[in-house]
Amino acid sequence: MRECPELVQETVARGHEIGNHTELHPNLLWLNPTKVRVELRLCHGAIRSTIGTPPKWFRPPFGMRNPWVIPAARELGYRTVMWTLIPGDWQEKPVEWLIPRMQSIA
Ligand SMILES: [Zn+2]
Image (cartoon, rainbow, N blue to C red; front, side, top):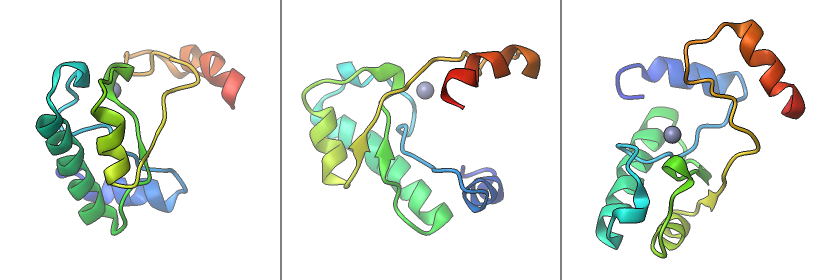
């Protein structure tokens, strides 16, 4: 986001939602309340300064959380979400491989 803010802005302009997924993508299960807040707030600030509005949604990396994660997200006004399916789209696969995996939510 910091390296390519115009890409993020174009993504928003095309109607996509930008959410908080933490600053460094740690497993939040192992972080204390202060470190959880720092992870959320750094990402929050980056998104806000890039797109001009604060994000509304938060998804914890790996879906992992401890008792401090959701309250820290609420402090920033977030609703926490998980996922409907895991398509594996972070892997370098052809579009013919990805599209059938996304059909159930398309
Ligand atoms: Zn992730």
